[in-house]
Amino acid sequence: MTISAISGHPAKSGSASICRGCWDQMHMPIPIRGPLSLPFRAFGITRSKMNPDICTICERSFQYVKKQRYITAGATILFADIRGYTGLSERIEAIELSRIVSLFHDRAAQAIWENDGIVNKQMGDGLMAIFNFPITRKDHAAAAIRAALEIQRSCTEALAELDTGYTLGIGVGIHTGDVQIGEFSSFRSDFTAIGGVVNQAARLESQAAPGEILVSLETTLQAPELMGGTEARSLSLKGIEQPVEARVLLVN
Ligand SMILES: [Zn+2]
Image (cartoon, rainbow, N blue to C red; front, side, top):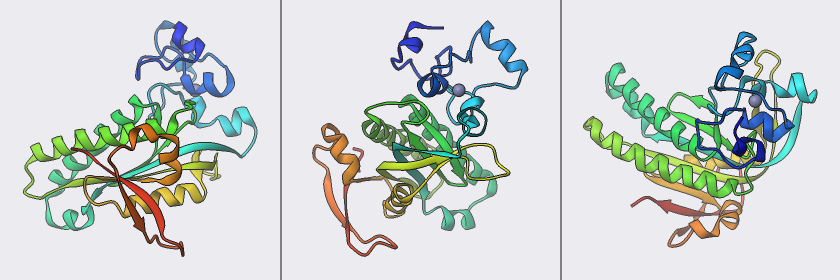
């Protein structure tokens, strides 16, 4: 167990010796690396695919530990996907398509983990990430924006190197607020986040052009230091009557 893990200071991503989710949520030291983790592994408790610094207990904590179906928590939700993917998937070979999709997922996950977020869902060419659960961070809005900037930087570079003959880009949407986090299915045992904030983040992402990060006003208010030089944009989003104000972040 490292001192940084016990005191709650962020350990470097992918290096914590105890599960940071179990520690932040329940103050339970669950070993996930090193010799102490071996007996836990024998009982099927391993590192989570959502983030290598959390464990599979975190994924099922609602049913087995918390004994409640869901909680309401402040969080930042990030959606990202490959823009123009549907058209692309009809025009190029399956093998080329799978290279593009795995490149995106690998790089995006790395950027999210480095900022203490979790990749909660992967949907073909897209993903949904949660910041501030189960690893807690007061600056979760800024963490999500930093992850988005890194996703754009690393994916743009790698996609250009692939030389597919198509101009490919990633779109990202970010929104902050109270979400319901829990296990909402009787046949799946992992958690997710639901609610208006999640829907709004998804809608913002759907409006992002390749290379753009659309950030809601609620998120920008929590991370003003990252908003210098950004453009304001008024969006009409599906299902919402009033235009929604957002900020556009571009990676140079
Ligand atoms: Zn855990």
